[in-house]
Amino acid sequence: MQVVVCLTSFNRTDCARISMEIIKLNWPRKWPVVHACADSGYARYIEDILVRREPKPLTRGAHDLLAASIEAAVSQLNADYVVHLEADTWIFDQNVIVRYLERLEKSPHALIAASSWSADRIPEWARSHDPRKRIRARLAPWLRRCGLRYGIRDGHSLSTQFFIAKCSPVMIDVIRSLRPSDGDILEKLLYEGVVRRVGRRAVLGMNEREPVHPNFRDVCEPLSLVCHHWPSAADAPHRDPFDRLQGKKEWLQAACLRTHGPHMKRLLTETDLSYYNGAAKRAG
Image 1 (spheres, one colour):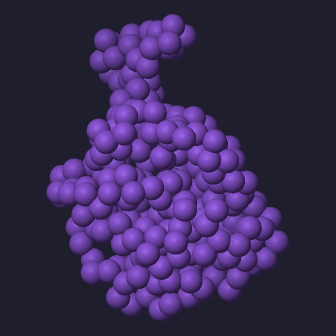
Image 2 (cartoon, one colour):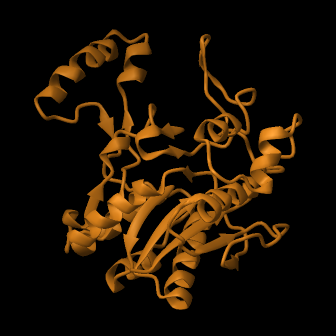
Image 3 (cartoon, one colour):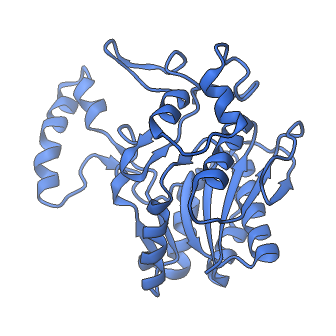
């Protein structure tokens, strides 16, 4: 099968370059990379195909980059499967993807493997000053043992940060036909588009990351996935007074990759990381 990695970036291009170094220099299986980028100042790096796009507002821009990268993967590289990664979403272990490719290959009705973009409300309720919400926080675990997804919202969605899709005509048409507006959530539109055309059997869930928020929003170790954009722990927010998130630098060190490209080396050795991703936001 022909597998193509579709990488999309708006302005987090240092994250994108390191993602390419992970993929091209360290993954055992050699898959081509299509990079759709809306940063006019970006210089071509080691991607196989660079697709330049005009910057657009958040949701429309994310869809435009996604659709353009997949279009190039199919038309120029005859992709059977695409692996979509947003620029700041790194996967260290290629075997995570291989396992899901094998499951998709064996599932004739499945078109896409992804987690949802869901949120667990228990932490929010437990911290609330409203006693009714604190009661809900205590009640939720009991109801979940009975098979209910009480307190989990936005389960009908598909994470666009990282997914694997079959390049069937139906799947390609679903992505092409999405028409997001600025107020839409792309993750919900993608789920609705797939399910409306093919049904829920088309979705192969990545249960390792469920629910995404808050525990797996930034890191999901079972998927070897790091998907935030703080260059170091010094830039990362505090979750509480005793816990600071690791930054990309610390996760890169911990990954113990065989080959470090020049952009990895700079992140690991530079003392002033203000250069990282230029003017891109470091939060949100």
